[in-house]
Image 1 (spheres, rainbow, N blue to C red):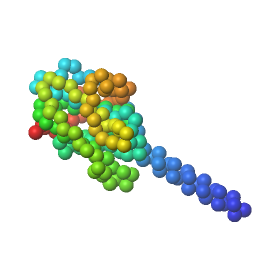
Image 2 (cartoon, helix red, strand yellow):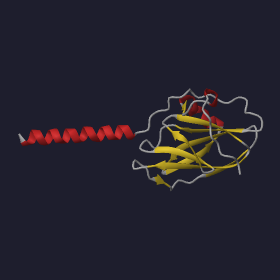
Image 3 (tube, rainbow, N blue to C red):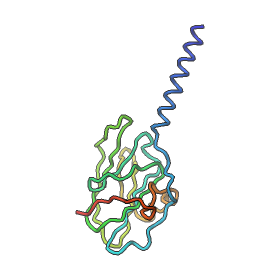
Length: 164
């Protein structure tokens, strides 16, 4: 009888552990499918920040010039329309306890008016971070992503940092 009770206790513990793990796991984005902003608005640059399938155990937020952007879900992208200038893109990754991990290197890009830029949250070997991608590289994965949040035309205000 003791064995049955111990087995039942382990089953309950396993079920609770799985439930907790699943509730903490990032969900896939459910916004509109990928769409380029065409043409690039006058006086602006567009950067597409995307995440395909990495860091599955972490919630990922990107900071652009220190301003937090929405969490990037699995297979998610977010277009940012920015003023020309220098921007720093840095991961703000939190572990399951909510503590921000700070060992990710940022990248800095000089955005020029009328141009598009592509930044992937990715892992490259043992290096995890944000990487600038060419349009050819990015446009292989981006069509398989969905936008994180509704577009500004839906009435939601988007907060974007300014260039330095």
